[in-house]
Image (cartoon, rainbow, N blue to C red; front, side):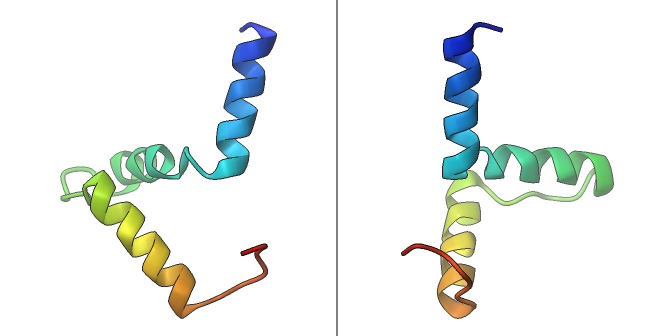
Length: 59
């Protein structure tokens, strides 16, 4: 993997952009055959949860 690619993956990880991908991987490994949230619904749920349960975050 090139350094630029590795750096880009690191930035995506910090920004949380891989969260939906990880969710899909988790569902496939632990809940096969069950329906999964669409990406749009996933991000809406995540945002709503952060608003309901604020934790230590910058914003």
